[in-house]
Image (cartoon, rainbow, N blue to C red; front, side, top):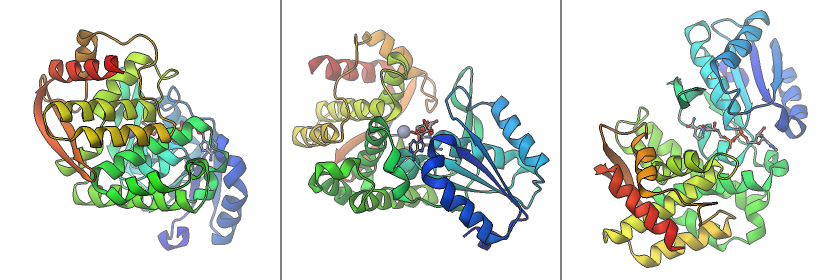
Length: 337
Ligand SMILES: NC(=O)c1ccc[n+]([C@@H]2O[C@H](COP(=O)([O-])OP(=O)(O)OC[C@H]3O[C@@H](n4cnc5c(N)ncnc54)[C@H](O)[C@@H]3O)[C@@H](O)[C@H]2O)c1
Ligand SMILES: [Zn+2]
């Protein structure tokens, strides 16, 4: 795959926490393609997904001979592939890049679609560019060292994928042995393959999120707000998305757009995936939730476009709902359980 790109050199940004499971294969493959290459390892964190870090990473790539025809490879979790993609989007005004995701969330979501970004003090992912990777390589066996919470977070996004357009994916997660949901085996390979296909299908039809790509935000309007209010230690992204999905389901049932049975089914599945169904700690007030939801970067004025789950494999974009209404539903759902 790397050889097919015919790059002048290869510059790898490697997630240190994935090094144990990928290093040997990576070095072997890089040596086999017989091109100049450099591997820089780093320890990712949201704080270091920054412009300062991008500058460091790019600086080293240039010192190691990167030019316009070089290939940048991001190997690791979503933080690493987002940063590598961002560097590639800007290095020499843009060079080719590839993603080798090693977390479940990275495989199912972050590595696909060409959204690259770093964080600013003002918020997450606010500085970036669309820059499609020319290769994405996911090897499920690299998940074997993943922490339990990272398994769950990835599963949250996979459930989301099933709810958007893959009913068979929901069935697969419900029917496979529970242990498979924490194992780098064939069941996970099937789940990853289905979610990658669903995301690829949506982003290739709408690469710049003009319409249908918005469906991928299912659970995220509520989820982002809950994530910020709880703090990342209490609620990781995929966990917040799971709660967001439950809030969206509650609202959909209230609006008579989804059945209570469907809401119960998804709640059961999220629990099976090890995801929370309650807010950790004290639930913020409706006013606090509304304020946070209104900060959503996908908003137009105070009206918010959000995604309503209808039935397995079917969601709808509903434009222009007031943040207050969304907050009221979220509050009702999270205080009722
Ligand atoms: N670009 C997009 O479309 C998109 C979509 C979703 C999320 N994201 C971004 O992705 C990031 C979250 O991704 P994530 O959940 O992968 O987080 P992450 O990159 O922080 O990875 C989670 C943890 O797992 C470690 N890790 C990586 N591979 C491992 C392995 N094989 N074994 C053990 N540990 C391993 C990482 O070092 C990290 O500590 C966020 O910054 C988010 O904004 C981007
Ligand atoms: Zn997400």
